[in-house]
Image 1 (tube, rainbow, N blue to C red):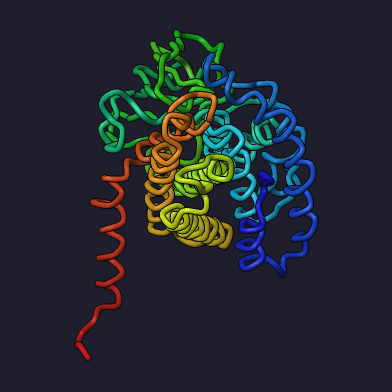
Image 2: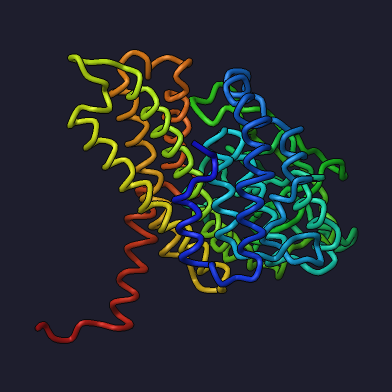
Length: 406
């Protein structure tokens, strides 16, 4: 099967068939991107997972191919097409190598923050390089004591009036791309206990250290690190947006990030499904091919029902993002549905393949290890269900309540 499937095109057709660039982008997803994934990304996935290597060369090449810039305006070197096209491509890349794709997705979240909230001067300085793949970006939000509860961050920023610079002290943890990144979208807490955002580079005055977090269970094809800042000086012009507004920016970025994680998880689930389907056509059991057993048919059906649902929810959330709508609820729901189902599909594929599914040669066990991260990253599923989605549902009801039953 192709990395870009007919089912993906079906959802894009439903949402965007009237877009003037529809045929061109579908041609890109079916042609150049498909070839790139088949020839360069998929063949390296197992080795990159084993060696914990983020494939920087493939990242640069993906940028040169034009994938990273799909949804950005032409003035920055992009195509300016709606976000679902990018999410569909990201799903395909994730099916080929989810670890590598996590780095791509987080780079996209950081780039999106610069595009949406930074000054024109900062956009001119960073955005074209980021969306062309010449620079790698990281989103530096999480800390050891503030994951889902981002307001508890301890990284501090102070204003040095004499030098006309901001001074950062503190640390960030679990930061994807942090070893290779050249641009960091960094959040820090001011003396007024409000969060501000900064575009940070390496090599400025002060201390900025990066320490690899090794031996991860999954997504080993991405790099993850701890960042420590000691009296690290940031130029005044590298403040992103307005002072004290960074938390709001981060929450909007996370909503977009949850949409991409939904697509990422759907790619993982599709990959595990296809590998199980291949094995089911080869394995004989009780005188029949595994695929001919009634139970297998039920399992395949349940796998695809959930995959299709997650895909539709994720691409629809991406569509509303392109339309400028609030996607807090839709992104969170898509992320929870797609990540939970990816774990389910990978688990069932391993169990149904028996011992073969449990060994690395099958490629399925890697899908499960990668899928588990989806439930945690970009907002833990438990928090999204208890806080984000629940609040959105109650707010909707309060705005348009049921006043009588029928």
